[in-house]
Image 1 (tube, rainbow, N blue to C red):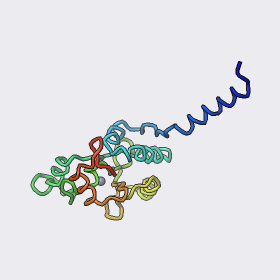
Image 2 (cartoon, protein in one colour):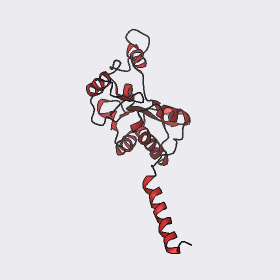
Image 3 (cartoon, protein in one colour):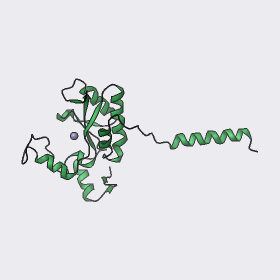
Length: 174
Ligand SMILES: [Zn+2]
């Protein structure tokens, strides 16, 4: 028979191991559309994107992710808008020139009664929450819905890594 003391020690060791090995997994966000868009992001920012949306929700700000990863084709189509296709110009970035093309950016907006609120006194707080999770906020270049996380990579860095096939699971290694 094992001594009680040893049983306790083994129990403590197992609990300690579980504690050390456990990965903090952020729960899914309140909004299915947003969660599906977050699932398209670079694996290194998915958890932080969820944490950002969940923190805002706890403060009563229900953010929807309106845009996350964009393929190069989608970026080119967006660039064409207002130039060679109908609509307003919405981006100055061609394919490969947006952090969205590398899964490193999200656009968000607060939803109230099912409507997006772009003219919103809460933008400052939303920006602060995003920044608290390590995102750079687009307000400095007049794009309040936009947040990106670069891990120190410029767009040129990401393009070079892509050219050199520094890619894992379909994403540039950051
Ligand atoms: Zn954006």
